Image (cartoon, rainbow, N blue to C red; front, side, top):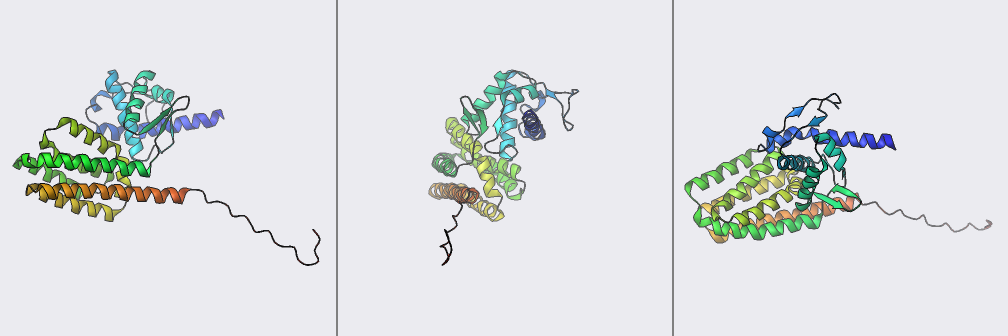
Length: 286
């Protein structure tokens, strides 16, 4: 049992540092605050400790690293996230780890239960659909408020984001360009709290969106819908833009719901059939 526990702990620590480079590249606001301290106990070539200061940046960096690992499927649904293992590897106390897990729990990435600790949240069909239903309502409102305030510069920025998304084939980068395109359409509304809500939902729905991106035909359809959406914004056609963004997001939510429901059905254990009891043959004794 001790050997199994140690193996799981080492695997978990390897997973964390396997995505460290990606996390710092994707979240540059903390990249410069992650000095590596080489140690004697290295595992597969990565350092035994990392020094992160100050504490606020420490908890954010831990949260960003774990979030990226979850999004990329390295940390799987249901996998335990041991506070002591994370704290030891980052050479920090339990406080910033708890802060990071609390942040991830509020975003829906992690589930924390009393006496059980933290685990990676499961992928839920109903949650995926609901996220996109809420996004549809909020983003329809946002684009309606923003459309008359777009300028040549803001439309040019939206075009840059759109072209980057159209040309991108790598999932992680596509998600980033997709989010940037959507937010560029709503930014001129001048509603910071509305934008904050939309941004939170984008992050919460990111790992669900990747299920859709695994199917090239669905990405191609999304790209076409994005082109039509930007064209409506350019024409200042509010009803069409709102209808397009609503349909785009609701369709995505229903698609993800269907994909996850089908996956759950396929993964569910099949009930064993009972073999029919054969009737005794004439002349046989019971």
